[in-house]
Length: 195
Image (tube, rainbow, N blue to C red; front, side):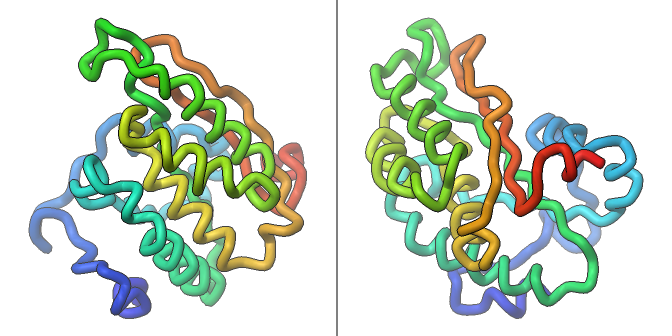
């Protein structure tokens, strides 16, 4: 029923290759799922993996308005469900931290990652760090996670919890050519979320 609630939002379908072939998970899905505490992993037995279209590589800045709308629609759908829902966004940061990396070096890499970290500390008050600063750095920072962050921001915008959101950045660093961030978001404390 999620697909029917997303009509008119440039969503063409939710499927994998075809209806008969299972979609294998790779590290981009497995690692975030492993971040759920063991007790939660056993409890959450349904998973929905959302992939963004390939145009995100060249046109992610232009996708911001539609991703915000899509996120708001997804939040409205999630709030109507009887099950508890965990949202996990796998988000690489800039892919241009090292000259010898596959995408070369850009002086936008560190400022992009810093802007995402600032947004993650307080999405309500620091929205411009994502929607303006990081968005402007994105064409040279080459973050494949940018669209996921914007979608998540849209989901939070579509919920009353955003104003009372508590978030924490657990790590925001790079040890290779790309940066990674680990952050938690919720309307309760992190300790309460882990219990």
